[in-house]
Image 1 (cartoon, one colour):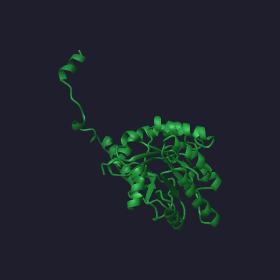
Image 2 (cartoon, rainbow, N blue to C red):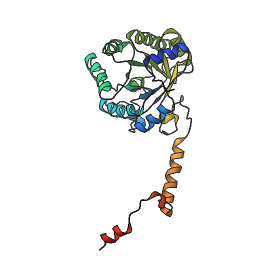
Image 3 (cartoon, rainbow, N blue to C red):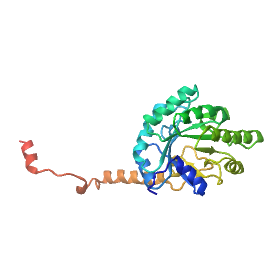
Image 4 (spheres, helix red, strand yellow):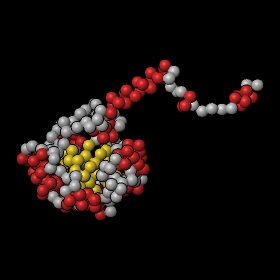
Length: 278
């Protein structure tokens, strides 16, 4: 568990059929807990726009937002590989701008890899980012930055045309040099076909069991975010109820005078106080 997880570890895990664990993280404290718990990779996701900033999509997230949160996560992660999302419009205008922005995530944010959404249409962009010695993780299927094009957060790949596009995207991304692909909200059997077709790890989110690993938004799996609950999310605990209970206890004890107690306070020599009042 103490060995540093790298992009090579991703490939080794696929070859050894060892599942890869990945969770999102947006701050130092949570990153430290997740890292010490043994998670393989931390994704500083643009999902922070929804679960951290309270927006209804990821589109408003800026590059500076990502750099800020990446810095915090990087400080808390010792073993896990830190992957940082390239937000909307940070890689869409030109290849040159995409490379420059990916570089900023590395230099300023401390990212060890970047992730961007899209398939064949971004193959050349990915190729040039990788050429700049920046590891890239792909993301296809339901890509949240394209939510308005999809008409909402909907499953992708159910029709022959969609399924063929996603399969072609996976092949193109592998050829472009990504070290892994996130596959989101696609039918399980399509995931199986893609996992067997490409030689790089497939990390699923709502893509079923035939993946080389899974990624979830940490606020979802801990039961901290109730605005929207995707079908593929399993809440492994309900942390929000524990937090609410703790906060109510804090307020009750403060109101009753049972907090703070003597053990929570600091003392001073009474002579000092006497001299202050003279």
